[in-house]
Image (cartoon, rainbow over all chains, first blue to last red; front, side, top):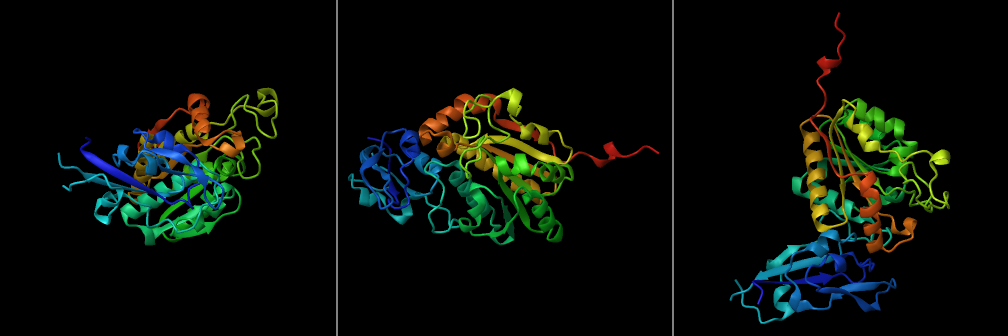
Amino acid sequence: MAKVRGAVVVDNEECKGCNLCVVACPTLTLALNRNVNNKGYHYSYMENPENCTGCSNCSTVCPDSCITVYRVKVEQ
Amino acid sequence: MTVITGKINEIIKPENLVYAKSPLLNDVSMHYCPGCSHGVVHRLIAEVIDEMGIQEQTIGVSPVGCAVFAYNYIDIDWQEAAHGRAPAVATGIKRVMPEKYVFSYQGDGDLAAIGTAETFHAVNRGENIVMIFINNAIYGMTGGQMAPTTLVGQVTSTTPNGRNVDLNGYPLRITELIAQLPGAAFVTRQSVQTPAAVRKTKKAIRKAFEIQAQKKGTSFVEVVSTCSSGWKLSPVASNKWMEENMFPQYPLGDLKDTGRADPDLYKVKG
């Protein structure tokens, strides 16, 4: 099991579904949701939450600053 | 160290926060298209100002172009300038209030076309300002017309068969020209398409503001950017197109980092 676990919170209404975070995610955690938000965009969400390491690559490339990242160290 | 049983709610707690939206970014949706580089650069500027603790001392000058509403997004003092005149307005602000941090934020239509004279003369005077230049090789706001920085062969709404050198001339590498001016202290070209590139750009913007504090001369940060709406590509495809086509024409890296030239070198002898 990974030494760190992470989680991201995406502001669904701010997300414009540009897909840049999905491409930047090294652990294939993120994907675009089949559902759309009120603006009609397929917002980003954690498809595989167990993969997330909290590396914050997604929030670094997000043009709309709609991703918040959390990370914890895991006891082995 | 915390024991995690796999539940997301145990991770999402304030003490585990790694990254959150900068407090300097206002709680409004940006009007930019999905995937626009402007949003990333806005965020980097907000983060740099926040980290340096200069929110109350910073004045931005916003351009005409897509970033015309920049004053809605970053919670600092702003002044809107006429088209292309942001460096001239920034000069005035900096000279009246030399203790403030002043920066201009311009696109390629504003800085490299209508504002070329103001750009060159502000840098040539070695004004202690930061100039941030977003180069996406197109006029994004008005509907994707050809800009001076448009690549040869690039299709825009005013060059439907691609930019033709005989008719439209060559792409203008304005950052190379700026680097030759003696008043320029720090001239760099960066991009924001990958996490690594974003972090490098943030360092460059921070360095530019620090050089302003040291009164070394003009700092000029070009950010090679995408315009997915103008290029008629998806944001991810735009980044790829930029890497393949823009980077050979606009190579990344620092072009000058020496500070303003010594005035004695330019003095008359007698």
